[in-house]
Structures are given as structure tokens and as C-alpha cells.
Image (cartoon, rainbow, N blue to C red; front, side):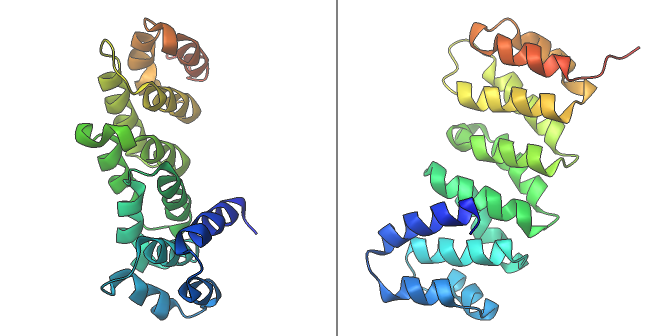
Length: 191
């Protein structure tokens, strides 16, 4: 069993608190039945998450909207599971949605997983979104250091020369400087 699926099933089993619906959804092979869970009234969040995750990893695009909502959830575990499923989903809208979430200043506390997803997708939206998000994190006393570090690491992984200036700015921040040095080392020098 995939490690991400194992973590999700253990967490959701606890949330389901012995509901027989949990086992039914885990065993369900009918994608239409799983998709119905996403829109039926009165379904608990754990059931919707389980259905969306299973559909997402199966490549069923009906899970897209639910997974994007979960990617922006206040619970980091839900965000991580949604990011994993979105990476496997293969929906062309995913990068645009992740970029919008990563750059939304009102939701920056939840931007860590959208940032990581952008790096994993290596989509055209990734570098501009990470640059924008990182630049906003370079203000004095910004409380979102983990988001800034994820942007720096991601920009280093992507190795795009457009990131050079913002990574150079990050060198002036003691908490970010070491990561910025490593990221800059991964960016090809322009001649």
C-alpha cells in the first residue's frame, strides 16, 4: 500500500469512528458511486476526502474540485493527501489552481502544500508563482518561514534562472540564507 494512502486511511478510519460507511467506501470499486459521494448532501468530510482521494489517484477528473478545496484546507494532513492525489490526477487545471492558492495572500498560512505541488508538477506556472510567493515572504517579521523555505527549495529544484534575483534577496534573511545559497548553486549561470 502506498505510504500516502496508508496515512490517509489510518487518519480517516479514526475520523469515521467505526462507521460502516468507511469500510464500504474503502472497498467500493464503482467510480460513479465514489463520485456521487462528492456531491451528496449530508456526507461527512472524511467520506468526501476518501472518495476524492481514491478518484484522484485513479485519474478520474471528477475529483478535481474536491481535491482543490482540500488542498486549501486548514488541516495540513488533508492538504498533503490532496496534493498527492492531484499530482497523480493529471488534470491540466491543477497547476493553475495550485498557483492561485500559493499566491493568495489571504490564505498564505495554507500555501505550503500548493507550493510543493507546483514544484512536483514542474508546470509553466510554477516558477512565477514561487517567485511571487517568496518575494512576499521577504518582508520584515514575516511569520511564514516554512512557506518561504519551500519556495526557495522549489526554485532550486526547478533551476530556472528567473529565480536568481529573488533568491539573491533571500540571502539577506538569516533564516533563509543557507537554503538560498543551495538553491542559487542549482541555477545555471547566465553568460
